[in-house]
Length: 221
Image (cartoon, rainbow, N blue to C red):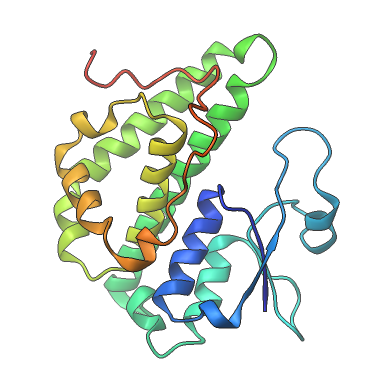
């Protein structure tokens, strides 16, 4: 199997955490492929995925598999431990899929916010305000549910949320989200030493990278 991969993609990180959790690291070759949010899409990715996005998983005998949720679900069926990450039925499955949707949606809003701000004249003010409101609302819900995140067995939902919070740390380091969400912060910090999480941290090796991105101003309201 081959995974079209980039070290700074939060959705790639999500898949990589699942790969580590399921002990599949040695079965998957990582192929560097950077998706381009603006301009012409990467032809290497577009050849396999008409959406031009990563991650994309290439499996002999199967069509290319995308997006991250579908990849993670498929990988979970390759391991006896897969059901622990993605329960097959009932309320445990709904809980994990709902958290996955919340984490993925938060990550998507952060990425779209960044793309908007990198546009001409710093982006459309109404769009920026909309993204900011959605991000803050998602974090408020996660703060309220931090206790449930801690008491529920680790699964795809917690993985998606950790990747979203990692994106906040990576791209919005001045947001002060941690000070405004103490319960969510405490939970996320407890997860930091989990081997799969520690092995996939996105590191900013080029210094501050916020550019025109305004912070979320938590702690200033």
